[in-house]
Each structure stands twice: as C-alpha cells, then as structure tokens.
Length: 237
Length: 207
Image (tube, rainbow over the protein chains, first blue to last red):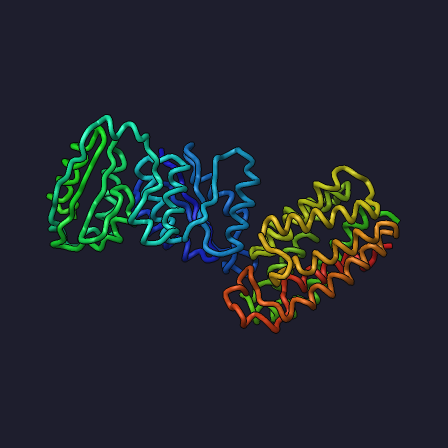
C-alpha cells in the first residue's frame, strides 16, 4: 500500500501519458489520470470535477492521495475536490511542476514514503536543478547519523547502457529510500541526494561515468552494498 | 420587495438565457486572450442549472443557490466552474435557511461570493479577471442596502458593467490570458464580461 497519485489535466491524453511515464518508475503506486471533460459533444478539453473526485477515491489505498495539476483551473478543480472530501480521504494538492512533480512523487510513493514526504518530493521538483541536486526535503534525526559513526564511501564506474537515466535513477533512489542511511552521489562537480530521482538524473552520469557514493547512518554499509550490486548488474537492464 | 426562492430560481433561468444569447460573444472574447471555451462552458453549465431546477424545485433561496453551485462545479469544465461554483456555494452558505433575502442580506451574499472567487482564484483587483467586475458590484450593493433588492441589484449590475469595461486596458495577471503578458491589454476580459451579464440577469426581473 502506497500513497496514491491523481493527475488532473485539461487533456485526457496528457494525464494518461503522464500516468504511463510516472508509472514506469513506480509499478506499485496507484496513479490515476483525471484529464479532459466529456459532454454531449463527446470528449474535449477541460477539467471534470466529478472525474477528479472519483479518481481520488480510486487512488486511495488508505495512505492518502497527492493531486497534481497542469494549469490554473485544474488546480481549482483539484482544490475544490479535496475540500469537498472534507477529511473522508486524506488528500493534498501539490504545488509542483506537472511532469517532474508527478515523476518525483511517484518514485517517493513507490519507496513507501508517507503523504507529506511524497508532497515534498513533488514540490522539490519545482526548485529546479540547483536544489534538486542539492538539499533534499527529508529531515532525519540529526542524532541518528552521528551515533552510527563514520561516512562510508565507494566509487563505481557505470557500465550500463544509459547511465543514471530515468529508470536506473529510479531504481537507485528506491534502493536507498528504504534504508536508514543518508546517501550522497558525486559525479564530476555535481552532487545529488541518493533518494532523489530527479537529482540523480540531473548528475548527467552516462555509461563509463565514475560516481562517488558516500553513505552515513545505521544502514550505510548495506546501502553501499546494494548500490554496488545494482551497478554490477547494470541496473538489471 | 425581498428576494424569494421563486425570484432566485427565475434569476437562474435568466442567467441561462443571457449566457445562451451571449455565448458566441464570450467565446470570441476568450478566443482573443484565452482558450475560447468560456462561452461554451458557461452555456453548458447554466443549461444544466435550468435542467436541475426543472427536475427539483428548491425549497429555499439557499437551496437554489447551492443547486446552482454544485451543478456549475460539475458541468462547466473550465475555470469558470470552480470560480462561479465557489461563488454560488459561499452565497448559499451565507443565506442559510432564510426564506427571503432582504437588501442587507443580498449585499452580504455578494460580498461572500466575491470572497469565494478571490480565495479560489487567488486574483486581486486589477488582475483582469471577474474580480474586477465583482468588486465594484459589491461596493455598490453595500452602499444600497436601504433600497429594495431590485434596485440594489441594478446598482450592482451597473457597477459590474463599469468594472468589466475597465478591464480592457489591463494586462492579465491570472488565468490563461496571463501567458500573453502585454498582448492581453486592449481586450475585454471574458470572465469580467460574464460576471457583468450574470449580475445583469439577477437584476433583470427583481423588484
């Protein structure tokens, strides 16, 4: 069971395409498109309040729902739908770029993150490359890291065809997100938080790139082992 | 002189007529600076409102306003759906169970409707939106609470017309037109125009 995602768009094709794209990185997340408006003249552009409400119900598996929107009135329709639920379902409208926000949210939800964190992941996609590759929204207990000792480091050379492209980056982030470890990846002069798929993609690491991975926290060693395993298996390409 | 359930329902029917008559004009205004759907969307919405009151006659003014709200939210599709829907919803909440609405109440209703639009659309006066027609209408209504409801509504409608006309030189800061930047100047805002039309419809038959 994960947080569900509803994609509110003026266009059915846009919402469905984005659901497909985000779903590729998050096979277990309920991503429900709610795009377009059907009336007597057939399917057209617009946002359908009733369809959005129905999509929220379908997306909710008990962990809450994050809604993303494309343009102005889609936001209003989404907000109106959330208000009308009046707590019957836990739902939240993310102020995030539609495509990048949906991908970031889907990956966060796939990793088991709770609603607030999924929303933060979507919103962080808003801040662009600089902060996507820099700080991560997660605020873990500062004490836990110190208590568990030193930072561990490892270097890997990527041998898979596409480098840290979308799917491998998602696999990487998912591997890291489940562990009690802060992971940072450095490639050239770029650095990225290991649980941010967008930041990892922004590294621009391609086949043959050398990445330096540092990990701290209770599961630091396990994190490096699993990442090494992923790299060795060429991200199961 | 006060506004009854029958008056509200009759006003909603006039809204549908007026929007239907001006459908093409609203489409054209929206084609110039938006996505050309405002006339069609509102026409569909108010036609559905008429069907709704045809099938169930509301028992109070508040119930009529709420029925209009939920129908517009479900049927309109564009930004006007959530915006006018929220306006009618706030109006309904303000009215409560009252059987008749006197002038001070109608002024309160207009204020609540505008606040709803502002909260939903996050637009301010001068952004070239329906708020530019609503705001002067509310002020006019609030200074006309000593007169019969019909006159209050006429004052509000006249102020809305002036407010709508004043959107022409403005540069849009909200909605689809805002993507046009400076090029949105020189056009009448379709949302302000439809607000003017709707308030005119409300004023039309009310004594």
